[in-house]
Image (cartoon, rainbow, N blue to C red; front, top):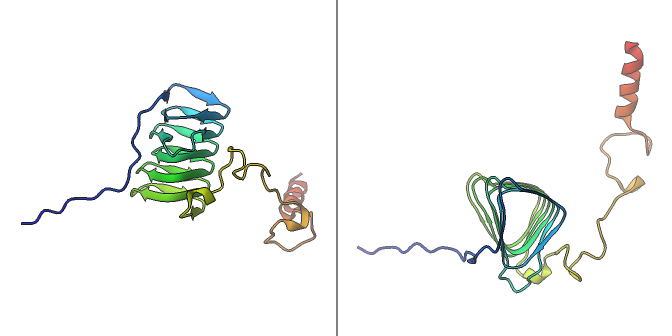
Length: 175
């Protein structure tokens, strides 16, 4: 009989130089090189300063990030509330839960992983927007819509919130 050798995708290999333990909460942005393993909670963006493709972040199932994640190689098995930018390889494990957009070059997604946002593929890692890195799309800051530019799905005058009017009318009726 012929045996089939199971081929695996290119997984990032590396050691983890930095650990954020389960009982640790970090407030603010983190810039790192090498490997970063997160078991705790981060309120801020996590950005790999190493553009060589060797940097790796791993977010365990008990880890949480409220902010963007920018790195060449990313493994997620926890919760992320923010955008994810993986220039080389992204692995979404079964308990990964992302609320935000995902920008990737190569992705592995296990059954059970969820993304509540857009998934944007780019064959060229240099074409991905990379906030936090100088000259990589961070110069302009967030894009904000104002006034008439905002999408609306209810008829009415600009600047008038029909829900606020209903609330005040119902409050007056109850008094």
